[in-house]
Length: 396
Ligand code: PLP
View 1 (cartoon, rainbow, N blue to C red):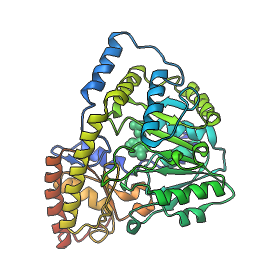
View 2: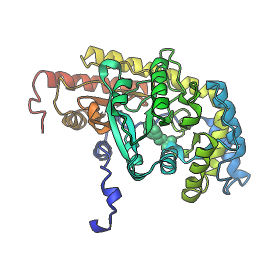
View 3: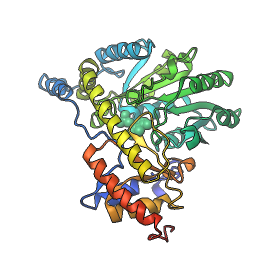
């Protein structure tokens, strides 16, 4: 049947991390620090708003742009947090998660031959989104010694006459890196100098630690019109299954995205949109509680890694840590597979997020504190055995 598959789809590699989830799904007693999904249920006040929406029959399409009430609340929310003002009727679009927002933003703006620079390690769906839009992803490495912050000099060196856009995803999946104001300002100047569009995936904007202030790229001086802000409810409010995200952009860019959205999707799920509205209105205390708990788990992991000698840049955002296991195994895929089979702990090899992730593993701490404690015990025992040479043949 392979001849029926399109060349475009063939050109997109299968997800490098899926295999581990498939193996883990066949096993019992696995502690998963694999999937990047909050373990918390959606806060009750949000679920109740959705139930009420169903009961009063809010079951039809909304406007293509999404519920006006939700866009208005979102405009207010972004203004309060970042001082940016998006006009709700012309500059905000409610999407089916950031997943859809990414696809339509690229569909609306990229031509074949265009290049999109992506600092990596990066979220696995970025390069495929660029390829689906017919353009070319250009990965640029980041380094653990820089805490995986994007390096403006390397990015500048990757710019060619074909470069159309820069895709930033901070706080970062998989490294937990955040964008600092000084680095963001240099990138902004670079975007201006080369007339680049910037897709800024800020889905983890609320999940920041150690007093870090999230940098909203569009809120930087002169960046508003060349930035497409992508954001969502999945991570901040523990709402992955509701499938609600958004896109904020200059009216011309937003209108092009709406065109793609209306033919592909029509409108984001109505009940989910009412749930998102409740999240904006009443979700703040829950966000604070969840962030405090993620922070506790993050510190637990960092202490654990230190004790077992795994070097790990301090992650200041999202809910991932990205320690190195290079000194234990030349092939983190094997490391993760053996850890899963022998200790029933699921983590994912970093190479799946780009070649500069090689040698690292992604550990997600959106799992209960006591489970992380147990996982650390198991990982520690495994690391000890590996270091003692028991698993000498840790290469394929
Ligand atoms: N962007 C990043 C960086 C992510 O990690 C994810 C999900 O893991 C998404 C986007 C997709 O999120 P959504 O549920 O809003 O489609």
